[in-house]
Image (cartoon, rainbow, N blue to C red; front, side):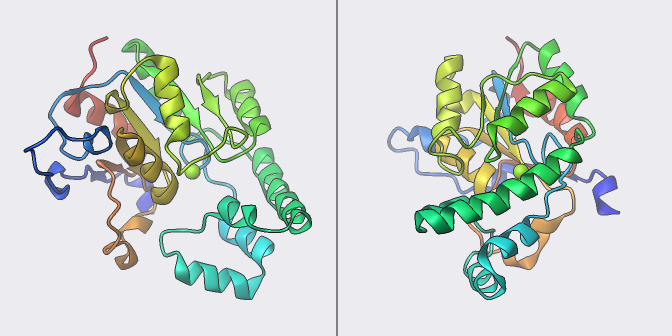
Length: 252
Ligand SMILES: [Mg+2]
């Protein structure tokens, strides 16, 4: 099982294209030209599949919402993944209502089987010991975040669910968290298991990004041509401790 091997897959800083330095670099590119021992003041996590063990069958959920034919068509057009919430926004209110019912049903089934991701509690204790802030951004419902907080007793603040608009992959929720922490996005690491949502959100906000890829699915050839790359890639959360110590200045 590849997911149990915890491969060390730190993305090489050299895999990112340096930008010309003749003029000040915009904030959005600061994480691209990785500087050793950058200061880190907070970590923002995705929830489903990152802080919790993936239990929602997203492919089945998309199929149920879109129907087989439409699912195949949309899947072919979006090799990095389907943005179902964005798709639904263009639908009629009645069709939208039905779609949200299907999604909520899948999410409720997921809540019944909610499990914390191995290494998540230890990573949060590590962040506490370094006095690093921790936040959460999810496209799931507020009630799912509340349940996570209650069941596992680890609090993230701010913790933004899809009621916060615009949601991931828009950088707005991450920028909101940085603003409330009074830190720069370039002093924050976004960790998540979705390239198109979490890495996209982090990149556009100007933060460092870490992709959690438990199964090696992002090693598939279809991602070779995808321009969006995280700064780091790990196959389990326990790989994040040494990454933080090696790559960042963690002094408060
Ligand atoms: Mg996720």
